[in-house]
Image 1 (cartoon, rainbow, N blue to C red):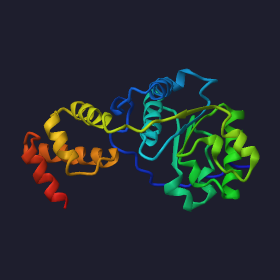
Image 2 (image 1 turned 60 degrees about the vertical axis):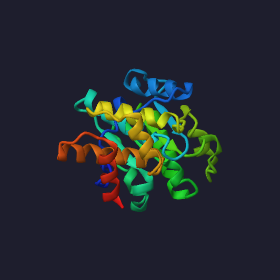
Image 3 (image 1 turned 90 degrees about the vertical axis):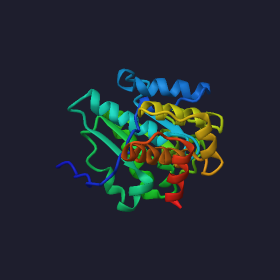
Length: 240
């Protein structure tokens, strides 16, 4: 029987979602999993299946895409499959077809399809196949995998076959450090006064802050301007 064809999906990777751009908060859990993911290809048995879980915007997608980028860069002939289920589940379970040639399979937001028996059966079969074939499987969930309300008890047990790691979101003390680290990586600086100005006038969730950082970077390059409070004020006005 011929290998079923995988659907071709236009999945966009976020610019800058790499290990070097991920700010590792000082919590021990984040430091541990960051090290494991960075060395994923050299840790065979223990990391064949891993689950990242934690609240929205904790950085799970960033880390998963960083794993994909590193795998693709380290093995030029390696096939990597990244499937953001929240975005593509509407295409149906056929999107899980044709993954046999993927060295690394990444399923983001699996909890989005938990509770659907057809999807759960497909996940169950995929996990079994990866286990038998030696393919690496990374998954993410907003909930602890041990607390997911699976319809299939056998799937519930397989979701915890490998390591399970909580990714802790950045707190308000860590976010300025993350912004400054990302800015320095991109070749400019954000002063404490500029960050304080942004904090008092802009949403503080990390996704919004990083999106604003990208905008500031592009506008400063376009205008050949230093990022000061007046400059930030004008950029924020343009976003209203």
